[in-house]
Length: 154
Image (cartoon, rainbow, N blue to C red; front, top):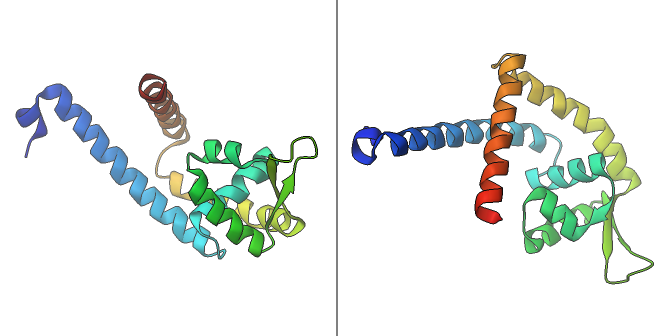
């Protein structure tokens, strides 16, 4: 069905954009999950290691905000990572209600070992676009995400 005919040109164009964006994300995501699982991690576990590995220790609330997830889901992920010895929960000396999440020595070692390999894998996937196309698409996606967040989450 031609969505432009059924819903108008503007809606048809937007639906076409959404369909292509969703399909591209799904394919890219499946490929990266496959790579991540080779390291014995789930995508959320890897995302925690990556976020803390790059940004440093942070509270659970900030980690949830950075990763766009809820606290309930994060607790399960952190419990599993802590059980594996990859993260530590450290109580803030000045505010005992605040708990900081940081990589353990083993978590730091694992992050340092696997992230460069994963980054190379992602770079290889992205090579279907030229470097200029990658920069342009990244800029457009940032504009889309930021604008939608400001407009609708505001």
